[in-house]
Length: 169
Ligand code: FES
Image 1 (tube, helix red, strand yellow):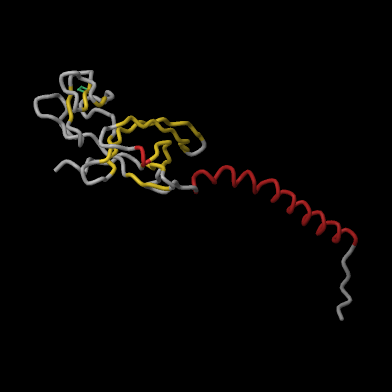
Image 2 (cartoon, protein in one colour; image 1 turned 180 degrees about the vertical axis):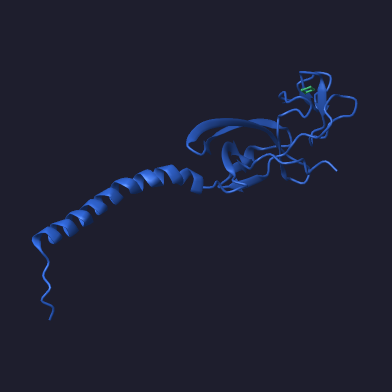
């Protein structure tokens, strides 16, 4: 058996160092976590966002669907509002088009031009698009409207992030 004894001074040193270290770690950990957490959290690509649109209410007539969601940019959270023009095509598939004109980014409306009631119309420079988003030659836009990936859950329409139009061949 060892006869080495711990002096009162050593005992106090060990105890205070241990307790002090424990308390410092307890204070530092939340700070480190706060600093690093948003960077480590990655939003899964292709996240779908719930709208308030019931899928059963969609027809072959495009309707405007506005929806909003919280966007986290590292430490900053903001509310983003987006719009889609949504309808069911002849095959019964849901088509969701971006309203952003491919000319200079104005907002297109379904039937916005009285002389072209069955087309998307951009009021800024008279851009026209077919129902599937195809840009009509002779008008300013040079590309089809983007589309949103769609998903149905509990009868509600979910939309993903805009992507190049897959309905225009
Ligand atoms: S921005 Fe739409 S036609 Fe120019």
